[in-house]
Amino acid sequence: MHELALAEGILKNLVQIASGRRVEKLVLRIGEFRQINPSLLISLLQDLSKGTVAEGMEVQVETVYGEIRCLDCGGEFSFNQVPLTDSQKECVHFFPSTLRAFGCPQCGSPRIEIRGGRELEIKSVVIK
Amino acid sequence: MNSLSLLAEENLKNIKRVICFASGKGGVGKSVLCSASALMLVPRGVGLLDLDIHGSSVPSIFGVKGVPREEKGLLPFETRGVKVFSMGFMFDSCPLLGSEISETIREIFAIVRWGKLDFLLIDMPPGMGEEILEILPFRPQFVVVTTPSPIAWEVARKLVHLLRRARVQILGVIENMCMNEPRLHDKVLRLGLKHSWVRFDPQLDESFGEKFPPPQLSEDVNRTLGELGIC
Image (cartoon, rainbow over all chains, first blue to last red; front, side, top):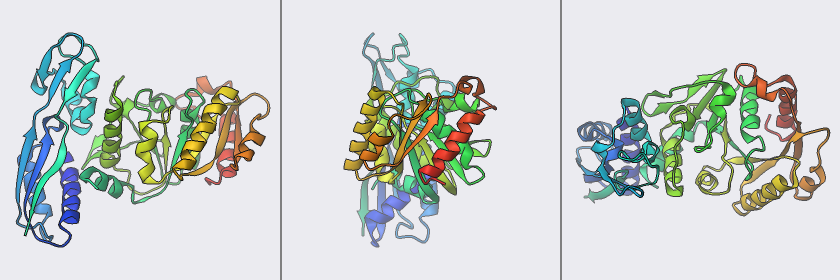
């Protein structure tokens, strides 16, 4: 369950940012290639934050959609249009940049440009 | 610090020593020496991280095809007492741009859970780019590997200068694939570094898998680990 590890990392980061002050709201930007389950991540963050300055905070997850453009055939694709097996999806879940390994869905060229889709960022924090 | 860096810090906090085997030049035997060293250091807690994303060879040296298990991140594959992680377990080939290599290395450190280790040995790729720069924040020690060839040594010497500029501790230089005797002893000492050497082992290629490392290489690597103060 990758979400649990990410939730722990995000919470540590958040507690550092808050430096003792109470956190009311957290907004995350997460790339779609990461295939993170937003409601699971939110629920884990809320569970893990019990007893910390972030207990009871509101959490929002914004999904950042990515795009794949082939530099050879010019095709443009969304993540859903890349035919991946379950194990390939799992690789990309852990290491989003490795989406490049599967090449252009149309012509197979490895010369693809990947825009967005890999983010894992704290977009904003509201501190009381 | 971002969330991934904090996870990486957490994953590495129970590792006593992180030692990178690097050369600058390819084909000098980093992966072989790093893998043999890992096996020599068992039964102490040893992890082996193959950071050569474009040309991983640790899975072939050990003769294993492991699939890392998912458990709050990824657990390294365990073989012969060594915890091993390699992108070679997951991909046949994965062409990545420089920034993507950096990102993937940060992800590896953030999600691979090593647990308690006495040593994490890292098989570095050739070159002096992203991989070296990404690893520096983890304050590793370095072993520089070269062959007796003046061309390999010239690149290894440049790596030594780079590592010194980064104020990284260099444990020493291993001169690998020596035919009869080492040639670089005096040159390495003039740089103020420890020198050790390993003989060319004609049985190496036949040993990959269960028979690795062959007896001569085992003997030399054992001596080398002592000479460089690793054990």
